[in-house]
Amino acid sequence: MLFLGFTQSLISTFFFLLRKPRHLSSLILSAWFFIITLFFLGVLLPKGLTTYTKIGFVPFLALSGPIFYFYVRSLIKTSFTFKKKHLLHLVPFLLLSVGRIIFLPESISAAYYSDEAYSITFLSITVVIGGTILMYWLGTFRLILRHQKNILDFFSNKSKGKSLKWVLPFMFCVLLSNLLFFLAPRFQVFSLSSEETIFWFQYFNFAIMGHVLLFFGLTQPIIFESSYQKQNEEKYAKSGLDRHVLRENAQKIEKHFKEAKPFTNPDYNLQLLTNELAISRQNLSQTINEVFDKNFYQLVNEYRVEEFKRLSNLPQYQHLTLLGLALEAGFNSKSSFNRIFKETTGQTPSQYLKSKKD
Image (tube, rainbow, N blue to C red; front, side, top):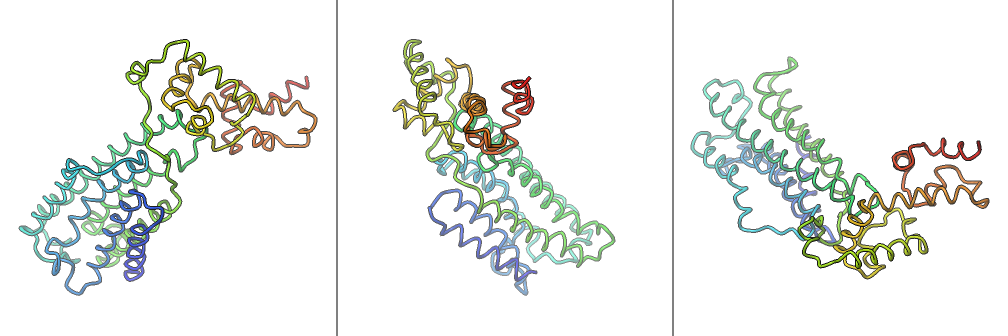
């Protein structure tokens, strides 16, 4: 298990470091896997990691929160780059490193968890690491909520990769995992021996976290092709668009949607509309928000609902199922189609088709 965990995390470190196309999010994930590699390396080394690094592995746990926070930021804003001010996020790591050298210079063994002499040191380390991870978990939670609101102005569907729905449960598991790393061996839960508890709540625990993050890291797409930030009212006020220009833009959008039906592309987004109409993304977003009083997601899916209704009346589409008609209209799944149709019309698709026959 130890060697397998070390090998998997080491390979993942280099895989994301060298992954193409290059993206900052991959480099940040590489740093995460490097921390897991250090953990298994410290366990495999006969005298522990402190023999070579002095600070051992424990201080690196304080980096898991900042690393994951910046990973999410790099996904939400692809133009994100590190600045000098971001070095402040290393403070918990540095404090723990200094404390480790001064108060706990030797390698931590199983005996450490039952030694009352280390109770204050143990509590201090746990509080700093747990508090740090919790703080960044809350920061990441705020990022995700803001992002999930903003993507409705850019995308016409809400897939898990775009909305990052997996991030919050994963961060909760990381927080719990790091607490169990210290607390479970200390209190000998489930009547397990010290060696068994350390195996399940440290070695096995870290191996599972590594495999889970590897899966999501491989399946998570780059969300935006270029940086995108929601255009707020202050930016709109400075855009210089009068009501006449807004109405012209709205007419162009309506004409394009009715004639070209670009919304039948399930991956349609605001950037594609920008390319097709040669109108800036900011101006399109302002037009949709102010003239149509909707976001991009609502506008496109209302057209999809109307397209579904139109197709359901055509003889050449009568052989298709409800899902088949929905896919033709641009929806990407049965669940999203049913939900959006009910929100838009107040009826389920089946109820709508039945009401036509009555």
